[in-house]
Image 1 (cartoon, rainbow, N blue to C red):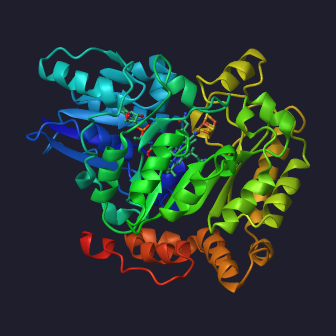
Image 2: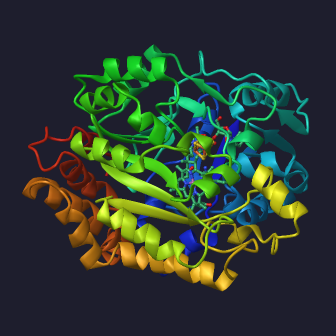
Length: 468
Ligand code: B12
Ligand code: SF4
């Protein structure tokens, strides 16, 4: 049977004029995971619209099944593609976060929809479909990663991504923040579970090159698992990045092990500097935590920080933007990601906003954390959007980058800060050119050098393994 797996892009990413680097970072890991369940005589391809053109005129080799992963921001495009294939009589399977949040909306564009993670329901569907008895709706209830087949990385066009070695060794997160996708997605079963340590280490071993990026929501969420994983990774010579909470950073012992295993940069969800906001969003694990101590701890161990901040919670007035940026710059945070609070359907936040009549519209294209889709409490929607953009401008202006770099002890640490922050945001036209020339993989050694703090690195094995 012939399967075509598609990750549709949101409008911005398919623009002929500009291609932000962030869409060429990670391959579609979820789809490659599903492809692992196919049988050896099935044919499969993965098309990621963020990095390549999707050809819809594939009549010469029509797929039997089209599998589409639907995020909220790509839902419109996903349905367009689904409708196209269904009109041609191709079986269309839709799954992912947005399908799980709004199954009835998705069902109108699919032959079968899938709610929740795919590891239990996708193989069930494959068996049903081969027997000619596919159901219309599959709902995940069994949550385990034990015994899952290897991710089909051979279907990933590695050369098109800066970080082809993205990896997830767990699913979900032990916390429950009101604005997070997680509770809705994992409803009806466990919402945080891990691979076995041996399986995770085996997957890491299979990845060529040196650099890894763990996309787990909270790699440190299960202390016993994380500790054994980091022990196992020690000596592998990897350089890696991941996400973790302030709480996990402050916990004694684990961070040191992560650093010994190669951690060099961490995405940290600070979200807000206002405790009332944290309480409002149920982000209680951040309450009473000393953000400054967490930052000092990471920096003293040589770990760079990508700080995540959300604007537009009810405690936020127009002063929040400059206050947050000044704080982040003065603490030497290397890169920052700002978001406008976005109530995703299915979340507790959405429910609250909906009941209060504060949702402005349901144009999912704009639920991208860059547009205001709810009525803020203490400022206007325009102020919120302008403040959001101004935060990026101010955080990444040269003077801020210098100021941040100057907080670092010594020349090498300052230079690393400078190279990382400037490389990410100051050379966007260069990224655009490199992406268009399909040469983004050639910048990976530079990324590794910066992460390693310009220390001599082993020659990257990834180079000789890349297809050209
Ligand atoms: C990597 C990532 C990105 C990458 C690339 C995405 C990619 N290549 O898949 C980039 C940087 C491009 C990105 C961008 C954005 N992202 Co993002 N991203 C992620 C992240 C961290 C990991 C995704 C991942 O690989 N997961 C691991 C794999 C194994 O899981 P999975 O993809 O979910 O696949 C499983 C299931 O979903 C299911 N499944 C999926 N599809 C299908 C289909 C079928 C038929 C079946 C059976 C099953 C199935 O089976 C898979 C195996 O279990 C998630 C957080 C998260 N934990 O999911 C956020 C996340 C998906 N992103 C999010 C957002 C908001 C965005 C942006 C809008 C942010 C922004 N302001 O720019 C953009 C928009 C992207 C777009 N094009 O629409 C939200 C989505 C909210 C929502 N309700 O849709 C998340 C959940 C973050 C969050 N906590 O809010 N993102
Ligand atoms: S800590 Fe992060 S991943 Fe976990 S529930 Fe909160 S926002 Fe979601």
